[in-house]
Structure formats: structure tokens, C-alpha cells
Image (cartoon, rainbow, N blue to C red; front, side):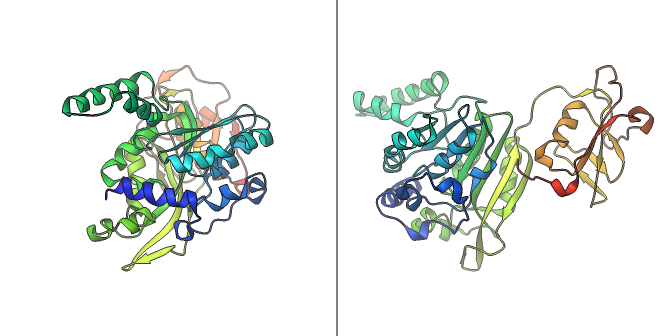
Length: 374
């Protein structure tokens, strides 16, 4: 039995009967659960609550949407101008989620939730369209397989399930660990592809404190139970950094392990990150001051920020460091008069003389209002 087959079978059973061992205890926002049918709540299997990162007007993509619980929770937060897309490969789970679409659309006041069939490691291929194609063009020989591959590639290019740079927020609740190890890098690259520049991710999943030995990875029950396919805790962050995300961080970290198998601790975490905006780095005279508590910190581009010093930054970096992604770790200082726009030429760790920003407006939010939401 392959990883995909084991996951399909176990979650098909989960769509039929509640599986207690497929989820960790999660403290969801009860006010968002009130509208949901009990069956959706009972047959949802997760380890976190990424819905709390949703903003009004967001286009949200939920990877491995299952019963649709996170989608229907998020739909209450995005408002009439937002949209929720749930992706799942399991027909039984999709049927369960779609079962309540008319009822939920009536409660929400609009039909803002859509469920589509796809694999989260290949968000360009529409599996519902593939099913229809195979019904009309069954596979009989090797030549048919070659034609199928050509059809799939054409579909990915011309009619992608999820388009490039089309999503404000990508969420997932305990699903990435179910993807085969050989597909995990492609999966994260797909998440990067569909996220808008400046868009965010909030991924709840299971991580391990040690690398998982091969004999545990071969255990299908542990794999489909969100255990043996988990990434090691550092590896989980690094795979998103390698894909190109910035401001990658653990926002939630359960101190108590969910499971311990052969001495390896498996715990629930939520990471947040953003996709960088590819604007040119233009110097207009901005500065930031790193508040502390460390003597210095480095960003994902290698720039150093010294505690208490006015550090020279380009406008793009200024906007990033003073955004919600970084909480209130930086004080942003806008020059009184913007300098002429010039390409960024400062070296790492360059200071901005006070005379250049004297009298400038300080974007200074009190630290006690800190909001770590991405």
C-alpha cells in the first residue's frame, strides 16, 4: 500500500465515522463553530486553528480541507468580498463538505466557499477534470499513458486548478505531514507559487524533535495518523525558507508533545510567513530602530539590525519590517522630506545619520499592543 492509498482509505473512513485518534485537542473559536453543522465538526481532523489568521476580504486557500470546518470558519471572517477555496483529493471528504454548502451559504448570506479536487503537492492539476478525461479516454497501454501526461501538462499550463499569485492567505490544518517525503519540497513550492506577493501563510501541522527513522516511515498506520510523515522541527521551517518565504516563524508551539513514539516527540505547531514583494529596493531615506531585547538581529536577506541604532533601509524593507509580520520589534522612522529615489547602495549594517531623519514621523506602536498575526 502506498502513502497516498493509505491516507485516502483512512480519511474516507473518517468521513463516514468519527476517528478520535486522527486529531489533537484544539481550542477553536466557539463563536465561529456555532453556525457549523455538528457532522462537520465531528469529522474534522486537525492540530491547530489557522482560521485565526484570516482577515476581511482575504482570498483563502485551505490545503486538505477535509470536512470543510476551517473553510466555513474562515468564511465568517472574510466577509462578502472574500472567498474561500478548499482543496482535497478525497471524494468522500469533498462530498461531506459540499453536502452543507447550500445551508452554509444561506447562513453566511452568500456562496463564498468552493471545494475543488486536487493534490496539495500539485495545485495546478484539477483532479475532477482528470477524472472526466479518464472516463472518456481510459488507459489501455503505454502510449495512452504518454498521451495522458501530455494532457496533464497542458491542463496545468492552460487551466490551473489554483492560478499563480492568486491567494492572500494559505492555511492548512495537519495535512502537510501526509504528503510523501519525495513530494514535500514540490508541495511548498506550489504554496509559494499560488500565494500573492505580500501574501501570507499560516500552517498548523505536526513536527518531530528528531529525524524519523525509516522503519517508522514504513508504518502506514503511523503515517496516515499524522506521525511518521512529520518534518523535523528545524526542517519544517527551512523548507519554507528554501522556497522563498520570509518572516518564517513559529507562532504557536505546544509545550507538551501530542505523541511520543520510540522516544521521539511529536507536537502541534503553527508557522507563519509571507511571500516577499519583488519591488526594487529604492532608497528614500527611511530608517528603522530595532527595539531589542537582543543586541542584534539579522533578516532573511542577511542585513543586520543593531539594538537602538537608526539603521538605513530601503522603502521596501521599511514597509516589511514595520508590518504585522514582524509585530512591533522595529520602530519605523519616515524622513521629513523624502530623498530623491535612488537604487539601494548601502552595505549591510549601515547607519542612517539622525540629521537625515530628524523631525521625521515615527511609526511607533506601543509594544504592549504587539500582534504576532501574519
